[in-house]
Image (cartoon, rainbow, N blue to C red):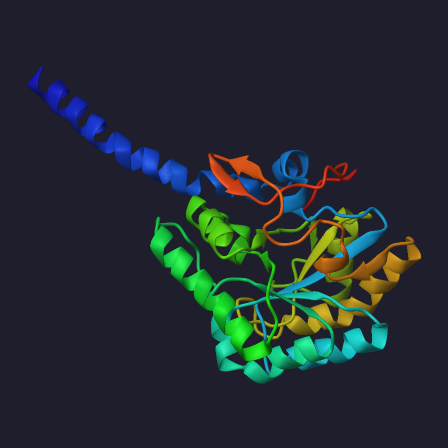
Length: 273
């Protein structure tokens, strides 16, 4: 009897910890592509049906990013770059060059970490720091936020709202961070899940990817753009995607207020897992 009573007390005492953990990680369920397409199309990056948003994560990098800028110039395409605050601070020249060439800067966080433990104060502090560094070093005011790994905890939802940023994930990616990625595999993976109105996730650096993996992305980029144009879709940044601007609209995930949705229809095929 005494053992059962002790066990019950332990379970009761642990309940607040479990509830706090669920409240923290619960919104990360939006990482599931089917869920966010159905319930949060704006978060999924669904925009105008005749447009595809081209986005790159993890930069800037002084070696690889300039090669993407040259390739995009040759293709006549502008994109959105989700940069890390620490990389902008470390490499301000390519960050400024992104802006000079007409691309859109967005925030990917301060570092590329996984937010498994609740730390709302740190989340808010680091995201505001990233926004400030981007603005001070490039003169560009970011409107969009994509957390590392696409993991949106309650703390990071709240931090984005406080910083005036709109969270946006993706509808198609190239799995270009893998060590075995090739231009053909990146192109095929994007094509399998992309439709008009979609947002493509690629990487312009191997900062958090397999060494040299960015070369596969760079090799695939011309064909990805040609595939989109062949389907009749314009290619450009999120600012031209028809999803609104940072801080607009509302939606609720476990009680956290976030950016709104566009009401666009979901894709015909599921996004990659």
